[in-house]
Length: 148
Picture 1 (cartoon, one colour):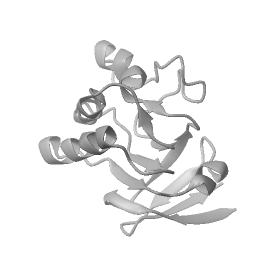
Picture 2: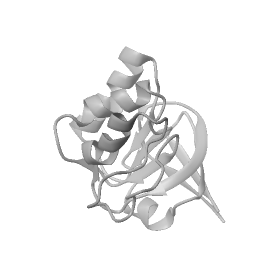
Picture 3: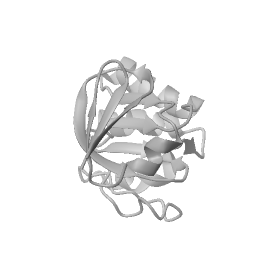
Picture 4: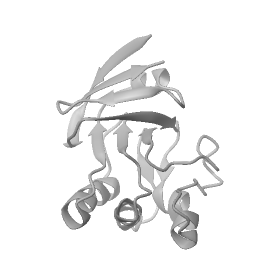
């Protein structure tokens, strides 16, 4: 089964990949801290408080989330993991993107020339539909196609 959602483009691009999904706020610092210190070429989620993502590999995945939470270092952390090549391929927000995540995806693109395709305002139905491991295709216009 395939379903199409339409959101607002924050950082545009056409990409496809595998989803990882959290129904709670995504703490960027807590999720990537261990990966930044270990530098082993993978981004294994280290946020013990996120039961949806803890210990899952986030490297090159399409992260589906309501919003980010946590420290003001979130933007810098996103830019750092993108620069190291272990960042997400895309971030898909059901709600409005927050300023910390927006700073991170913009800095990744401007400072490091690493694009994290980002779409927000996809709606609650998006997070109700999407599951871990699904194939997602993102279009330049903010269309998000979720397939089994």
